[in-house]
Image (cartoon, one colour):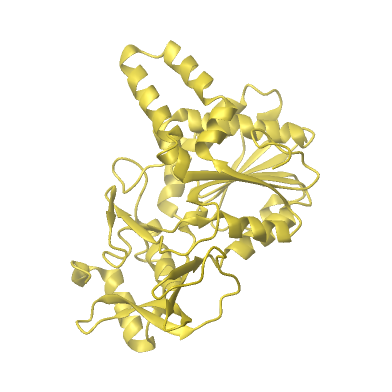
Length: 370
């Protein structure tokens, strides 16, 4: 049942389409809920922060963006410190991470002078917030906004690409194993005219998890946009490229339904309040890694967010912050750092993977042999 959806304009719009055309794949439902031009989640609200539906590591602790900024400057040096470098962020949220990155990058001579910032953001509301957040940074570094991720804006310069909680928001396809065959999982309507999951056409998956045979009712997910993302990375790698993806997900492919909705900082039904809740799915890092390796890209990781941050100097940076903070701020700094690095929480659930040109050396904290 989709309680409360009667007055939801996007719910009515999706139901009308289902009545006309039949059930729609889960990936299409997710795409509509997040990106509908009139009522899509990312088009109509500021989702991040205390007043939104969820929060992210850069909003929890400034140390997160600062350490990413140092990593970015190290990557620039590993490329030979080129005179110009594209600093690209996919899905920059409120602009907090980029602001912290650029502030930290000032300590590396020549880095900010070489950087050209490109922010890929589909939400006009968030673009306005980012402009406010980055107003001071824009006085030192050119900042350009793009609605979609494309290779053309990078020109012939090297690229350092950052993406925190970007892959999880890409639409996910779901298959359901029923009566001995795989069928596309779709969103249809039940006898009461409410949203319900229904099996669609029979399909033959290209790949499946190898740990066990499928069982009745198993769900298998894959991201149809992964090959396109890997293609774009392959094109950028010729210039060259160092890309960092940070997201929650699993290291090895597995059966399971990970599609989830978050509304007002609480989990909600995926089928309720379309366009009013954030929809995400866990990232299958094994599959993402495979697509990149197949395109002759070098891939390091994934490692956990805790490993990444601690090995970059999170403890040392937080101690320095607390040593100069006001007494009432020390507890907040410590709590934020613990939250993003907790191996049983965000620090363990989130993984970090680096994709780079083969001629760019492995970057810390990834081991050279990973």
